[in-house]
Amino acid sequence: MFPAVVGTVPYYRRYAMQRRKWVVLSFLVAASFVIGGALIPSAIGVSSIPKDAKYVGTKACRKCHTKEYKVWAKTKHGTNFEELKGDQRKDPKCVKCHTTGYGKPGGFTSEADTPELKNTGCEACHGPGSAHAKAAKDAPDEGKWEMFTDKTPQNACVACHNPHINHDKYKK
Ligand code: HEC
Ligand code: HEC
Ligand code: HEC
Ligand code: HEC
Image (cartoon, rainbow, N blue to C red; front, side, top):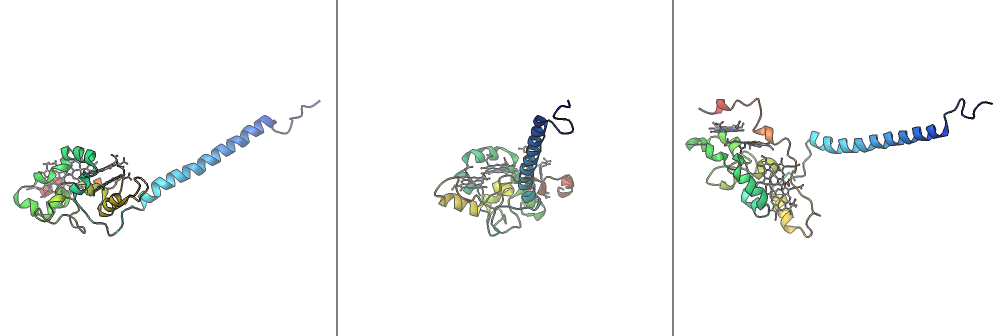
């Protein structure tokens, strides 16, 4: 008299529920990998650059990255040292943002000693490039070597561009 499904869930619904459970579960597992992989390294500041890497200057990058160099050279990052006049070119208050790697090992020291580190060079955003340039040069098989450079330098910009910096304060 009673249909066989009374008090139970029909088999086809049970199957759909089980399937949905697995879909949700595997989505959550996949999402945690994606979110963890993307957020954790950047949140804790992991970089693939070795601690002893040094600044080598924009010309060293130009050899292999001609396309990026040409684009960069036309932006103000490629010319902003020119904004500084006379003694401003020696003033730590100004060169810390209008040069590359100022105050860091192998970074800009002076116009005479480190002309390749004038302006906001490649390494101001991608980090000191000695290990990357060497690895690329020695690479037996392109794409299968450790990069030793930061591809997505999200945090690099705020060192120089930041709403809390009153630029007029620096300029006389
Ligand atoms: C000897 C050649 C060579 C030199 C010198 C070199 N690179 Fe590279 N670089 C490569 C190659 C090859 C790749 C991988 C292929 C590609 O993406 O073009 C690469 C990739 C990159 C990437 C992308 C990394 C990624 O994870 O995809 C960045 C950023 C980079 N280089 C920056 C620099 C900077 C900054 C310099 C100068 C300090 C520099 N490179 C010097 C050859 C070189
Ligand atoms: C904290 C980083 C920082 C420091 C320090 C700094 N600058 Fe700048 N400067 C910038 C940025 C970023 C820009 C681009 C500003 C913009 O487009 O909003 C800029 C632009 C300029 C410009 C051209 C555009 C404009 O706003 O007039 C001049 C000239 C200049 N800076 C001179 C100086 C001088 C001189 C000093 C030292 C007394 C100095 N800067 C110190 C980051 C800095
Ligand atoms: C103002 C910061 C900044 C400067 C200066 C800069 N880059 Fe980049 N670069 C970036 C950003 C941001 C990306 C994009 C990363 C991404 O797509 O995740 C990038 C991407 C790259 C890539 C990866 C491939 C591509 O084209 O997307 C290479 C190679 C590279 N830059 C090389 C250079 C070289 C060589 C120079 C100097 C001539 C340079 N960059 C200067 C910020 C900068
Ligand atoms: C080492 C300091 C420094 C860093 C790091 C830096 N900038 Fe700049 N940026 C400058 C200075 C200085 C100027 C402007 C100079 C001028 O007006 O001549 C500038 C100019 C610019 C301009 C105007 C470009 C043009 O050609 O008109 C843009 C857009 C910009 N920056 C975006 C970025 C972004 C995005 C990042 C990070 C990926 C970044 N900057 C990292 C110092 C820096």
